[in-house]
Length: 242
Ligand code: URA
Image 1 (cartoon, helix red, strand yellow):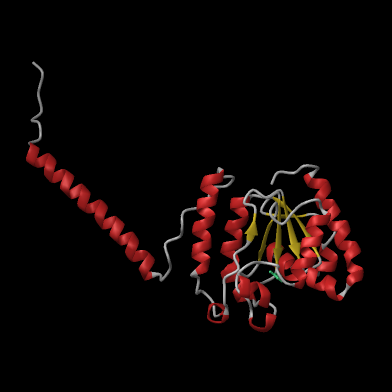
Image 2: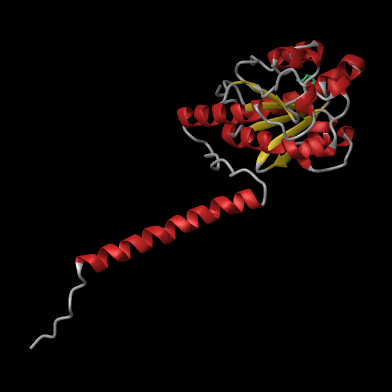
């Protein structure tokens, strides 16, 4: 004779389900309390690397909105606009400068002043357009009087750039000037010693070169920048994706 176990009553099943729901709810509430307790925001979902165009555009848009309302450091009090970046989200080459200046702060766009004009000339000489590359900065807000970014400002702003680069996943990053090269490569080596050779940033080839503003003061260094960008052009080959 087979022994049958008493089947649980529907009340017992309902009670089991209710206590399960309550305990899960408790854990979710605890997770919320944890974020409040340590005084930090819930991190946004991790970006998809090499996401398709629409995912990437959506994630980028969400990130730019986050940056637009960022008040993590005192630069938020003096900026006119957050200068997030501009260009193609599927760019092969991303140019990273130091921080917005007065013109950029006014217009909310990177490299639109005198140094920006020179950067445009460099990009054109590479056979590309500003629309085909992506241009951004280490800092998204202008330091008052264009002073050099402070290490703490770089640290607080870094997550935005990191996510921009991971979403675009370019073939090459061109670090413009000492601040960008040192921040990305976590080095104190001078730009004069870093330039001219590819370095690696999170698996992406990075070419450090002189900042266009430096070239305005030292036109003789244009020759070296031209050598550096030629190495980039060789790397991306003719007819690169945009
Ligand atoms: N210098 C920079 O480093 N970035 C800009 O956007 C403009 C000038």
